[in-house]
Every structure is written in C-alpha cells, then in structure tokens.
Length: 289
Image (cartoon, rainbow, N blue to C red; front, side):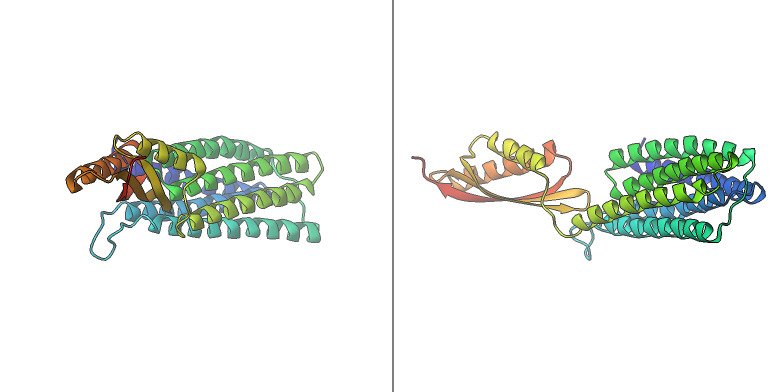
C-alpha cells in the first residue's frame, strides 16, 4: 500500500468511527443522565478535528521541494503537531473545568446502565484507533499522526474515567465521576505538553539523539579512505535529519580521489539511514603520521 493510500485510509476510518462514537456517547449521555459520558462524547468529537489537521499536515509535509521551499515542507508537520497539542490541552482543561463545576454545585445524578455499556465499547474502539494510527505514524514517520494517535488514546483513558465514574455513581458514590474526570484531564494535559515540546524540537534545529549520532559516526568511519571525522553537526528537520560533516583524507590524494571518498560518505549515510534527507560533506587534507 502506498503512503498516500495508507494516510487516506487512516484518516477516513478514524473520522467515521469518531463521528459515530461522539454521536452515541452524547445522545446516550443526555438520556442516560451521565455528564461524564457527554464530556467524553465531546472529546471524541474533537478527535475528528485533530485527525483532519493531522491529515493536512502530513499531506503538505510530503510535497516536493519547490522554488519557495528549497529545503522541503517537512517543518509544516510539527507546526500542525503544535496545533494538535494546544487543542488537546484545551480539551483537557474543558473536561476538568466541567468536573470542578459539578463538584462545587453538587450536581450529581445516577446514570443508566446503557451509559456504562457505551463507555466500555468506547474504550475498546479508541484503543484500537490509537494502535492503528500509531502504526501508521511509524510507517509514515509522521509526528502529526503520532500526536493524533495519542489523542485517540487520551479519549480511551477518558472513557476509562467514564466507566469508573458511571460505575461509582451507580453504586451511590456520585462524586467519583467528576473526580476521576479531573485525574484523566491532568494526564491528557501532560501528553499534550510532551507533544508540544517534541514538535518544538523539530522546529529549532535540535541535534539528533546520541544513538543516532553513534550510528552516523560508525557509517562514516566504515568508508574506505576516511582517516578522521573533524566536525559533525546534525539537525532535526521535522521527521528528517540534515547532516554537515568534515572528514580528513590523505593529503596526497588527487581532487578526484578525495571527491569520490566524500561522495561515498554522502551516499552511505543517505542510503543506510532513511531519515537523513541530505548530507553535506567537506574534505580536509590530513598527513599520515
């Protein structure tokens, strides 16, 4: 399956499921007297928006380089991820705020059994959507899809809160419903902050992690003719990596021979690490001792 088709499938399937879930949760929550299920339904509806935003981000990021964007469009994807993180955070604040209001007003009611059934079904469906979207994000190397996957999982946790809250209310512990909702909201806020920080790293030319750096050095040192690595700089470009490197080669080599070694370093890095979008190699003359 092509990347474009995979993206379209993920977007279509998750949007349809979210629309159905949000509709049933809100309707059942209203008639079943469950405020936490209504809030959970609103959370599911928000997933429709985040999925659309993620889809737009991945599509734009996949566009080829052009005259106005000679380094590509990949950075538009973490921009979308930041928007998703903000939206996720606001959703969590909304859920917590409503829960606090219910506690202060002692606005409790006993939910019906059907609300519990819908909440359990939501957990199963949303966990599947999380795993489905996360798998696609790994294949497409997409931070926006990964953020969207976590939005699905946050909805699954929200549904867990709904089950606990509804179950507690049905047993007479009415305050348990809003208290659990506040706890889940705090977790969602943490996830949104993590996603936001990760997207910022992809926008400000953060260096690669130590394991990736070791891999790059190993690949370069394996190239025949490389005597030393004099300088190595890396920077994240959304989900891609740019590498600037200076290598030392025997000073007696001809320009053509030195160029061939540099070209080999360039090709080996871009071939063996698919995340490296471009590698710039500079050659320094070194006298053997």
